[in-house]
Length: 150
Image (tube, rainbow, N blue to C red; front, side, top):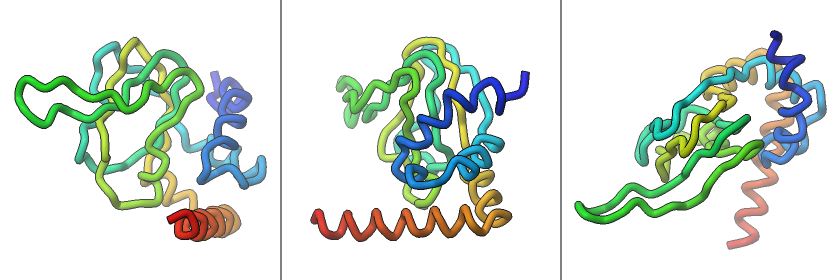
């Protein structure tokens, strides 16, 4: 089954919710979807650890993923930051930032997760100047807004 036909109706509204992609038009969203892959992770699978390179955006199709801070000392428990459920997303700033992951992610249940890698995203921007301009404008607006909110 073709990912675009099968999942674009689910992915389009989610992409509109992601601040980085919210202002893009439907053609740009569809272009992004062509670069998204679907992965299956069993319960308790570690997607990434705190401090790992941020290299992908994740969108949960089914299942649940825990975002948490790893224990700082032996005997401590992990500190849950968020629980991401169906249609939730995380890791979007990894596409435009070189910062390491500030939390870890682990599948709570068996999960199907859409992934957009940073490499695919960069290639997409290099080959699609209008998308690159739209993303750039969105980033500038977000930076200005963040500066005003400080």
